[in-house]
Amino acid sequence: MECSVNCEIDESRVPSSADGPAVLRALGTRTWPTTSGRRLRHTVYSLIGCPGFQSATYLLVRRTADGNREVLAVRRTRSDVPSLNLARIRRAGARWGANEVHVFRGATTEEERTCVVAELTRTLCARRGRSSRRAAAPSAALRSGPA
Image (cartoon, helix red, strand yellow):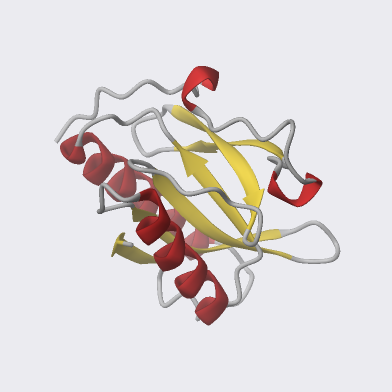
């Protein structure tokens, strides 16, 4: 399956929180490569500061004190209700020890989101296989699937 998603984030589609509390603001962006060679720019939020989204793919990430990031899960939202998606994101993040959520909004259809999840999962699993770090990470070879 070939993905035809917009690799760049559309800033107009990201909820603005400039007037809200600092905890709800994005922490920045992070670009993640895919097996097809594309680079997908994700908006990074703290687990607590992540807003609800109607349609997105996301990575649950544990960022350590030394700045290293470990991807724990690659998923997509399923509900049309942003608050339900947010509850699922936070529950899974808390369960697996994530402290960041990397959100990609460039995939607009369910098929595109499924493709992005598959590509990111393949890329991250391949990286993990080449890594000399822990062979059996708590992510169980990356959890993928619906929120």
